[in-house]
Image (cartoon, rainbow, N blue to C red; front, side, top):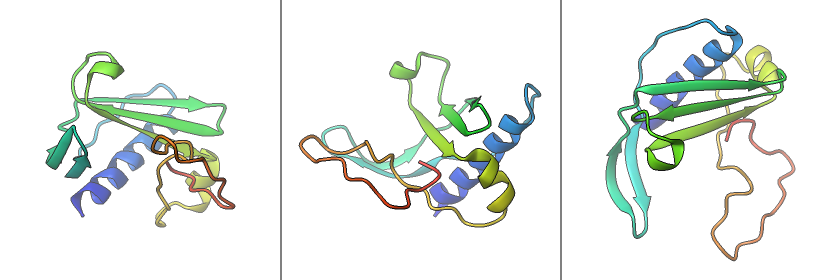
Length: 123
């Protein structure tokens, strides 16, 4: 699926950027696929990102922000990816598939949050 391959490329770029401190890098990829959000959008979607940011936190986690346009995050199409235990991901899981899931706290209204014994490191 193009979305998964593009997401993997973007994550690799983000990890490289995050661990390179304040240096600049370049890369390419795409975020596309089928998006089904009831009452909002259903069908093919292509983000066409032109803004990329990486925010490391104490060598423990990494937030990647991929966005179309330079507007505020609330008013632009974008994608946020959190990598927990980023040092572990960098050393132990390099060139291996990672489980990617929605954050545990993201649930539909009225659905309780249920803990997971082994949550995904990327969400």
